[in-house]
Picture 1 (cartoon, rainbow, N blue to C red):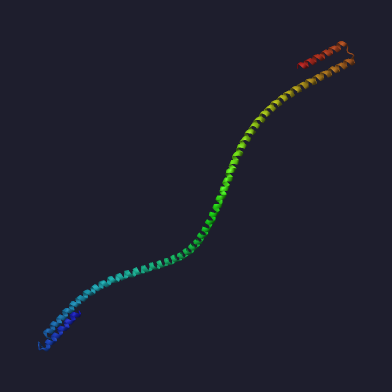
Picture 2 (cartoon, rainbow, N blue to C red):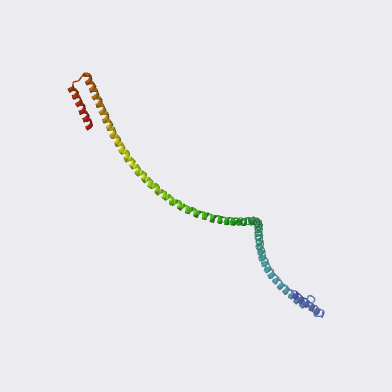
Amino acid sequence: MEEKMNDIVIQEDVVDEEVDAGDYVGPGVSEAQIRVYKAKLRIMQEELDQLSCEYYKKDDENAKLGAKMKELEEERARLQKTTNIQQTQIEKHRALAEESDKKCDGLQLQVSALHKEIEHLNRSHKQAAAVHSTVEVRLNRALEEGERFKAQLNKMKQTNKDKISEEHQSKENLLAENKMLKKQKSELVVGFKKQLKLIDILKRQKMHFEAAKLLSFTEDEFMKALDWGKSETQRGSDK
């Protein structure tokens, strides 16, 4: 536009020179001025059209930029919200990190204590291994003694079994002897009863003898009584 305005200024100077040179065509505006004005008008109309076109373009661009600005503002608000959330999360993570550091320190102390405990356990394990070796030797000896005692126990069981067998045999013998003694007792009781009967017969005979003596039995009666006593004795012996 500056170049076009410069051209117009140059054309005005030319027209002024022509007018000063006596090219005046009438009492009104000269034809050269009219051409200049028409040229100005055409140039200004072109510039106006160009400016209008550029205005609409700029207006469209401004609308697009406004929409883009709105989108960017929404994006900025969203990003700000996300940033705030992330900042909150960062604070939480920072707090968690601090807490984790504290826990890590505590765990480090626990690890140190555990290392000491492991060392203590290793020493205890070595001592236990030595004790285990000693106990294993004693256990082997105890097993050997156990086997020996087991053999002795089996021998004692066999001896007891033999003794039980002997005692059982002795018991059987005692039972048989007891049975025989009972039989002998029964026989003795029977013999005793027979002796009692015989004594009773003898008593009767004595009584008869005394009675005969008292009653002055005759010899025949006495002999009969005596024979009767003998027959009774004989029958008792037969029984």
